[in-house]
Image (cartoon, rainbow, N blue to C red; front, side):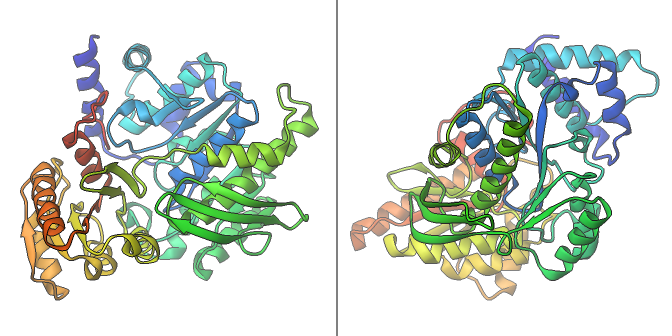
Length: 454
């Protein structure tokens, strides 16, 4: 297959939709002699913060001297963002060649139609094996118990904050959702857990007990203290129950919620490093505190309170559910409203999301609201967003048919405001990964296999 045919093949796999279960991924990887068994792994599930936590763990382990694979989803610009080794994205040519191998295997198997995510997971596993990585940091796609990534046997399982999302697949209650997320906890494998609502925590504790898994809970077994926060990132202290402590950690990710994500990552990385030290794994001989400090300081994770333009300042954040929108609103109030007097918010949200829940914490902070829709079939129309915003008491709204149109309007408004007030307005683009990905493209960033953003 050539480049365009590979794009069409992967894109068309989305017609198979989302299928939960490990039968397909087991069958597929068995045909390739189980590449996932050739390296160690860390598994990260949860609702919000999975990507940031995964990136921080990968950075710390890489700083410790290991060759680290990182598998995350979705992507913003390039499909190749999903699969990295020591921070370097898989090449488009590697995607094409491995996808062709998988297509040939699938065509030879009877009655076998793996989904897009199952094939992407298999691409990652094969690529990691061929790059001879030491350890993979694997982010769950959706849920956990029946997610394709749950084929791995990790050194540690990590569960970030659990909230309401993907209710049509995972359940209507927090207990049901937590049951699916807790499904990544394995027999006798330690689990590192963020602060949770009691309903979710009870389910996680029960699962850990059933699996005889040691459970490490943020705020009980390890903790952190925020010392300062600005638009460039955080400074915080970390402390563990065994008297291990690190002071003045610098994390170049903004928002106090990232401190908890980083703390989960530190605890998980310590477990991995201790396990490898005990087992005599070759290649590790560096000071743990220095590895953690340097690894955290080197973290880069796009799409989370990320500036993508300076004049006027344009900030993007992939807040696509109410909990993420709450975290974004807190960061705006704590940090950004001290620097910028006005915030112009561009909102594009998927129709199957809790639109009202996303809007409620954000709209009161906006001086201007521009509603738009990314070019994707699941996107809610700007008119539908306007109806919901008006039901919340916000009538001073502007509609833009595309993300690029919305950015053009916001830039004009920002320039006009600066002429009058002599202060720059902050343009915030949020509501969906699709929206912020299109924003990056509209401002000139080019990607690989860009249509495969799901």
